[in-house]
Amino acid sequence: MSDILKRTVTRRRLVQTTAAGIAIAGLPAAASAAPVSRISAPAVLKQDVQKVKALMWSNSPTIDDHFKARQDSFNQLQDGKIEIDLQLLPYDQYWQKIDLAYSASEPYDIYFWDVQAYGHYKNGLLLNLQPMVDAAGLFDPAQYPVDHFEVWKLDGQNYFALPENFQTMALYYNKALFDEAGVTVPDDTWTWDQIIEAGTNLTKRDGSRVSQWGLSLGVMSTWWGLQTRSWATGSAFVDQIVEPTKLQFSDPTNIEVLKWAQDLINTQQIVPNPTQAAQSGDTVSFQSGRVAMNPGGSWDLAGNAELPFEWGMVPLPKVGDNRIVPYWMGGWVIPNASKVQQAAFEWARWRAHDYQAQMAAEHDWSPIKHDARTSETMFDGMPAGLKPVTEALDTAKSIDDAGNALLQS
Image (cartoon, rainbow, N blue to C red):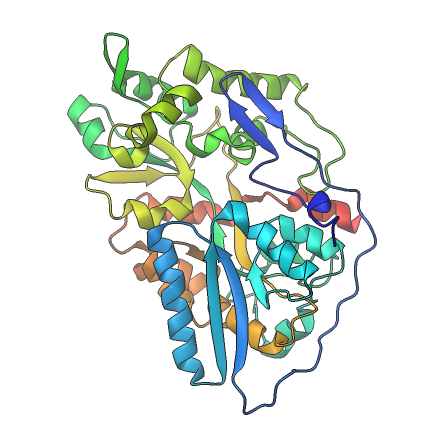
């Protein structure tokens, strides 16, 4: 098992933006034959409590509290039949912990998907969930956008991960700062050029010191965030997200994309550079109230709901006439070696179906179930911009689309 880490793909760390540019952190291993998985028999008697070890990374105090509350709700509903023991770890410890558990032949029974889990699939470690999905009658196309789920049929035919939520990107803005400056707030027609113009008007300087920033790079400082601009101009940073074979940073389109990010810092000077951000800490975060606009993830929604100032949100700005937004799915994988596979699946099934309405009310994720994602509860107490952000998911582009196409080629 010592080579597992070498064969995984890290979405968050593949490329990182700095004031000088963006560097590639690594490439995954070449494709190999799809593994064969099987469902093993339960290792406990039916009347025994089936204890399921589950793992998720820590997000924020608000989202972490929601995860713990979900664990408690599920365990109460199970009335002693199944007991989920959900652990939360910092992301930089998460995959190391999982790989160590595999190495010790004591894997977690279920854990949250990120692209590193694709390496576990390639090593034959993950359970084929399709028989369980079929038996549970999950994913009726009338209730779920099943076309979006195809990327998790890692062999092109079967689910090896079970989705429970959507994640996407949006532009958050501090309405109080816009009102104070007399600047019109963004809407879903705005382009990045309009954002830069507004950001220039909203940046405040006291001599050489900036007391208020018009814009933060936010998730546009990550490769998958900045690539949305490349997508909107007809290119991409790599030819395939999973198991890429070619980097495309020499493409003139992508050279311009990287220069655009650098110019926000060095030319327009409406975005703090990495050194300024590191030295200033939370004073240059959107949550500080001193940044007018911030491209962020939909996972910021629940935390922003607790901010002491009025804020709003809109879909990602357009590049000219084009806008392509990304989507990810959050969900669960189950190891072949788990001895409580059916119990672990029931936790994932419950979250993908029964819990969807409550997920909408909590606002930390976008539910995958149509009636929950479009319900009044989903938008209750939220900025009006949440609706077009949510609707944009219907035509969003998966970060994993290209990789899935490779697997089926």
